[in-house]
Length: 160
Image: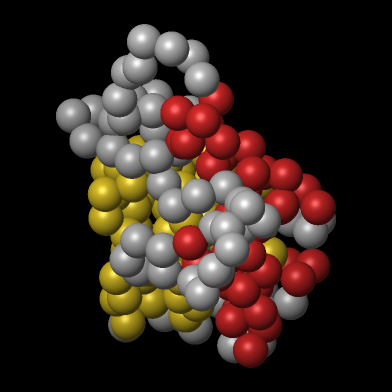
């Protein structure tokens, strides 16, 4: 079985059997995509909601809007079919408290919103999520059944 670590601003797709892991999701969002028939899995560790305001975007995995498309393309190359793909999300925490409530500081919330908007635009159903709050997460995504194990720092471990 392959076990692959997906770093910050990276994405990876994998055939069954395998596990994709990403460490230290704070305001970042882990986007886990699963093809229930082929059991191809994909995981993106995105840092920012949108690439549209960035002049030099040389890393599509960094942004929700571009990472999801890139991840799907990687999964298709492994035999995944769009009609079988569902999503699970984790992360998007507000890691620091600020005196002002400026939306620019709410990067975790903005990441979650952008991810959901892009998935909806692409017609991909979100099956479950563990997002928000104020703590970090480490996730393990299993090709066997599409389960997402979320180790919630300072809290419990959940499987969604």
